[in-house]
Amino acid sequence: MREHLLKKIVSTVQITGILNPGYRKLHTVAFTNGCFDILHRGHIYYLSKIREKADILIIGLNSDNSVHRLKGPGRPVQDQQTRAEILASLFFVDFVILFAEETPIRLITLIRPDLLVKGGDYRAEDIVGYEEVTSYGGRVETIPFLEGYSSSDLIKRIK
Image (cartoon, rainbow, N blue to C red):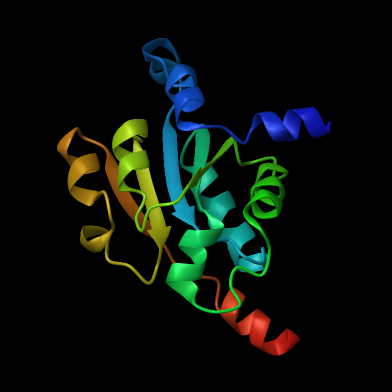
């Protein structure tokens, strides 16, 4: 079982091999990204909604250094391997790829998703990768947040 889970955590080289033209003809690929520091009900809602729109869900996961730069001191709460394994354990997540950059633009241009999705706090036009994905006919969408759920609020309550 664990071996199956770990096979879902892939490198950029592995994902380009998986997403070959034959595979792409048979599957609709969705991509999202984030820190997913403490997985909560809002994340489950968001990720499951994305998977309803595509055959394959790929998550770009911010590395530990990237999360620290974005979120500040004390973050991430969980290390990148832990966060990757937790995400990979979800049946509706097909692949997890770590990235260290400020934005996932390199992954987006490499993967060329049919669907790029972020949370409802974004306007589709402002999402990193919008121009690239729409240039080849892909879609960019947002999914509204499930009210009352955020990692930052959860961390504050725990403290």
